[in-house]
Length: 354
Image (cartoon, rainbow, N blue to C red; front, side, top):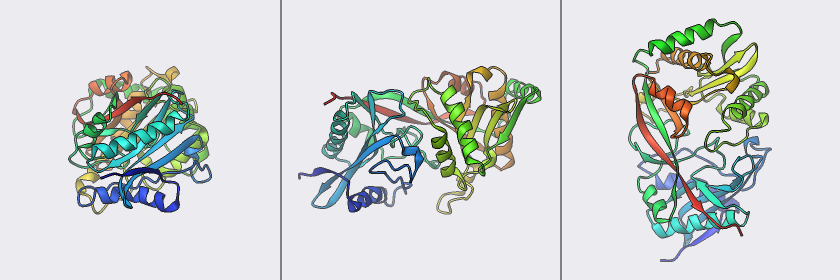
C-alpha cells in the first residue's frame, strides 16, 4: 500500500511526531521523550540557536508509519554535513527509504554534500544507532532502538561513518595503583583544584564548559563549537535531574583546566529495576592540551570514582567513546574491570547539493 512523507509543520503533526515512539515501543521499551523544534527557538532553548530543522512523518490514511528529522547545525566544524535524527519506523524498508530520502532532499536543498546520523539536531544531544547490547538497563539520554533498524538503514544505502562504544567499568575492582599514585601527586600539586559544579551559577559554569570543550575536543569526531550560552543551556537541562557531586571541574590557579561529567539521576525511576541505582554514566572527560600529562585526568577520574562509590554506585558506563578517540581509548585500556558493553553506529549518505 502507498504512503506519503510530509513535513510535520502543523501543531497536530508535531504532536504525532513526538508521540510516535510511545506507540512503537509500547509493551517493549518506554522511549524517553525527545521533542523536536520545527524552527530553532533560542527563547525556548539556546542550545538550538544555531540549528535549522525540519521533521517529517511517513503516513498512510492518517496513520503514522515512521518519522525522521533533518537538520543543519551551523556550529558543526564539518560545513559539508547535515544531520538526520529522531529516526523511528515500523519494520518496512520502503517507509525507511522514503524517510531517508526526504531528509536527504531537504539537506541537498541547503547545499549539503553528505548526511550523517542518527543525530538529534546537535552532537550535544542523543546520537548513534544501537547495534550491540540491547538488553539490560539503558542510562538516560542514551540511544535505544529496535534491533531491525540497522538492517533498514543498510537497505537504504547508508554506510558506516564511525562507531561509538560504551564500556562497563566495575567500581568494585581496585583502581590501578599507577593511576591512584598519579592522581595523588596531582592533587597535592600547587594550584590544582578539583571542585563540583555550582548549578546556582550557570553562566560561569557555561563559560568554563565552553572553554574546555572548544579547547580540548576540536579534533574529536562530530565536534561542534559550544558557546557559553549553549554551555549554560546544557547545565540548565541537567540541573535538578543529575547529582552535582559527580560533575567535576579541574582548575589550575583558578582557571578552568578540565571536566569530568558523570550522570547519575537524583531520583530513581520506580518503573525501572533497582539495579539502575547502582549505575551512572561517565559522559565527558576532557582536559585542555596545556594541562595534559600533569595528572589532572587521573585526579578527575579518581575523585569521580571516590564520590561514586560513596553514593553506592557499583559501576560506571563510559560512553560514548568514538573508536578513534586515542586519549579515551588509552585510558580505558589501562583500567582494570572494564569491558565493552554496547556499540552504536553513526551512518553516512553522500548527497548532491541542489
